[in-house]
Length: 372
Image 1: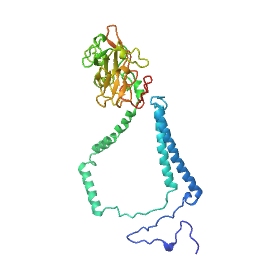
Image 2: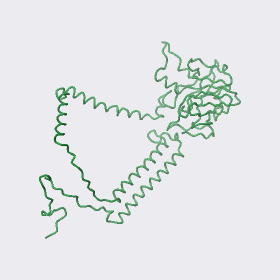
Image 3: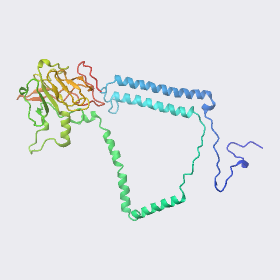
Image 4: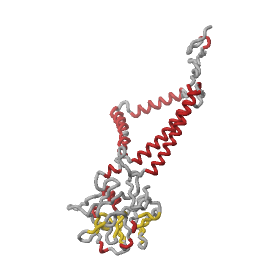
């Protein structure tokens, strides 16, 4: 008797068939050995590949840590597609580390782990004839009672409405942009970087909107204030801004005005002319999580946030002296107009409120403050 060729079967040893099992069980196919199962060199090569991926992943983790501590968030803010160098470096390094771990595990499983077939017996998944008949009858009754077959207008409009429901899922991708820098480029009060303040805009009292005369403030006074543009009305009696635009403007432009002894002031670098006879103006929005703050201690010139007790020294350029805030309080440059009222020299020179990922990093002198 000659040997059978690979893939042929001996007719005398074919699996038998019965009425209960009309198709014969051919059994498991012949096992195919991998190169790593029979070649020690191939096995070692695969082992080195897996180890190299794991070690390279560790290198990218180290690069992630280096980028985190060495690259400022605001540096080179347009390195790639509007993303800063820090964002690109952190994303690429962490993504590469995770990718290499996954590729190493897959290569390990495909080339080195045990490679043998296993069989798990299972019970028939088919329902009984009674259950199948009952289910089909219920479906037919439901279709008949709904009248879908007889009312194509209702059927087609239903299909169309369900299909259109997928549109919001696509439209919501719009909220992934623009980036803060792109939003800020749209103009005043746009994005997170700009407010409604502009040169020569008067500083007015909150709620009532009356302008603040520098001579009316005494040492130790604190006034909650807003920009004048929030309160004026047009000739027809309607406000210039209202609704959402008004709320956004007030949420970013709110300030506190404080007067202290000019001898107590320690102006930051380039801020020698930002005060008026001891009168300084700071954002009212805490740089920790954005709470409004106005708890002032006149003897120490400290401003306390009631939410998490972040404390800022208003005599020292809004420097953080206590609490979780990671950034000084932004200062609004002040001047006086011809009538003696306080006005802004410009908008804030930095974004107000809590830090965000692509916020420019701007320290005051050598205070050593760092963005979160």
